[in-house]
Length: 451
Image (cartoon, rainbow, N blue to C red; front, side, top):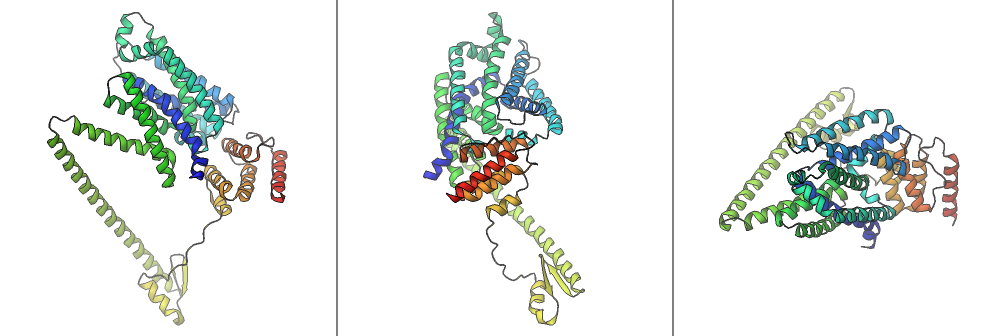
């Protein structure tokens, strides 16, 4: 349990902070019918950061990188404010979708020049388990300021979200208020997405708000329902991810889906004119779902078995063909076809293999060498630092020494270095030569080993 809190405490508090403001903003998003605005703003922010890389700002965690993202987000806020018309012949959601597609395409084009594809991957998945307490504190302060702004202007924001036509009739500058709203919204997204990722942020924004709207029509009650639901679902989802050893973000997102389904089913039964009929329909639907799932499972298993049988047959024919050369070849093994090995020949011909010895557990060094992408290598380093600190430090040194590692990941490695050593030895993620810093780090490792 202590190990659980050591690793999960910062991500847990970060999620609770996200739930607080995003649940409130989600109520506005649903009222405005702009469900995918956060995805679009997140993509705009990602484009801004990627353009920053084009200008040489490789450290995507730096203030300069954040300013690029924020500048693009403000531009997106202006676009969304201008795309809201009193007479909506075209739904605003169409403009939002178009902006998302265009900025995504532009990001791909910029990535071709900057080799910053890792940043776009990080935007989708986030790095929740890697969040630092300094980032949690920054989010808490920033969201408190944003929350205060929305509290002061709550009546204006709510009025233009619920009654835009009346706001136009009263002579309100709806576009100016929209721009103000989307700037604060975009600022929130710029902070949260780089840690939690697009999918989790989207769920934090929409799922609690949907549950709240299903259960109440009062805005204050909806807020409390959203907050309470968010805290409970997040707590349970993160705990499940720990005990099941599964990724935290996807687990929380999936658990939100389960809760939404359960709430919908309960409300269907409770609000039905005749409860008996609702329960009957629910039972029939469950039976049909189970039968359909069973048929799918059996059919998939049969297809997989048939495919495996075909593969084994092809391998068997290959073994027989190779036997004319004096050897049987199958499953990566070579068996002598002379009389002294008739038993092995017989086993091969009948698809039987001698019992294989269990493969040895790979060491952290082997796992690190087998990593195909920088993120995999970084995860091995993190795991090694937790369980075998000496090995982890050596692997971290190797990770930072690799000149081919993109600056984005070297920046994350530097953060680990700062966390474990209490200093970064002057290591610069975007520098071409870090020999001095790496030498100092290596000397520090030697001192730790000697001590």
